[in-house]
Amino acid sequence: MAQQTRVAVVTGVNRGIGLAILRQLASDSAGPLVVYASTRAGTLPEGVAEECQPHVKILPVRLSLRDPSSIDALASRVAKEQAAVDVLINNAGVYYYRERISDAERADTLETNYWGTLRMCQAFLPILRNPGGRIVNVSSQAGRLRWLAPHLRPRFLARDLTLEELDGLVREYDAAAARGGEVKAGWPPMAYSVSKAALNAFTRILAREHPGLLINSCCPGWVKTDLGAQAGPPPKTPEEGARIPLHLAFGEIGDTSGQYWANDSTGDSGIGKVQPAL
Ligand SMILES: NC(=O)c1ccc[n+]([C@@H]2O[C@H](COP(=O)([O-])OP(=O)(O)OC[C@H]3O[C@@H](n4cnc5c(N)ncnc54)[C@H](OP(=O)(O)O)[C@@H]3O)[C@@H](O)[C@H]2O)c1
Image (cartoon, rainbow, N blue to C red):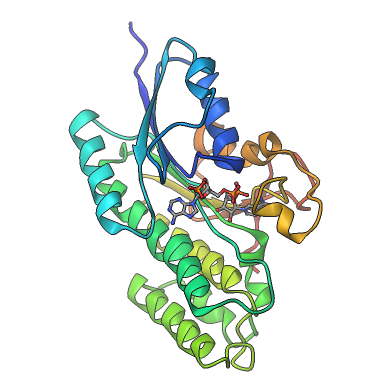
């Protein structure tokens, strides 16, 4: 019997961890695979097409997480072309690693890492294979709730938290940051931390609302990419950084869903495990 073709969608494959994920998928040997590979330019990075196994089809697509119409257009196209999607890897993200960032940089951080990534999930949920489809949201240890003041943590962790309430929390942070009063109000100094804490929270909410799917977030570790190198010399290669997202997307994870997954240390290169949200 012919093997079923797996369908994957990966964001931010132009460079860094996303490119390492794409390269790994291009050389995948597990059977027929179609990958919708998104970049902001809509073109594939050089060399990837040549690395592709004959049973792997990589389709370049244009997507900006700050442009909702590009997200909706991609989901509509995939729905027309495929019976279902097996895996969505939300890898694209931004980090402005400095003490003070501009209002525009804060907006980019929240729109890309939080609102845009959530919209990707919502656009693809109706076409994910059910049961068994997976979403991997690439997060960061910077999104752990330990970076928030104790009074804010239970609001993110509430078992009945809704997307509307989470949106309210992010807007509350945004308003405090616009006034320059976020740290006094208990928020972390980096918008990136809030964006990834919120990403982890919507991962839990979507997993609760879609019990047939496996929806998790993860930290890839501290990885040698443009983003990772802002904080010093990272210990991990992009290939090592791709390991956890790929494991959550295609590996044996049982019925793990709604979890934050990482290695114990950001320098470890293993496939990680469930970690507490705090
Ligand atoms: N590197 C680390 O140490 C580390 C640690 C923890 C978590 N992470 C997470 O890992 C993921 C990948 O990071 P990386 O280190 O590979 O970063 P990177 O090398 O800076 O690559 C980021 C990718 O995201 C894309 N992107 C940014 N904003 C976008 C938007 N609005 N719409 C669509 N695509 C957008 C970029 O596209 P362009 O190429 O067009 O700019 C690029 O392809 C991110 O979610 C990051 O937060 C990384």
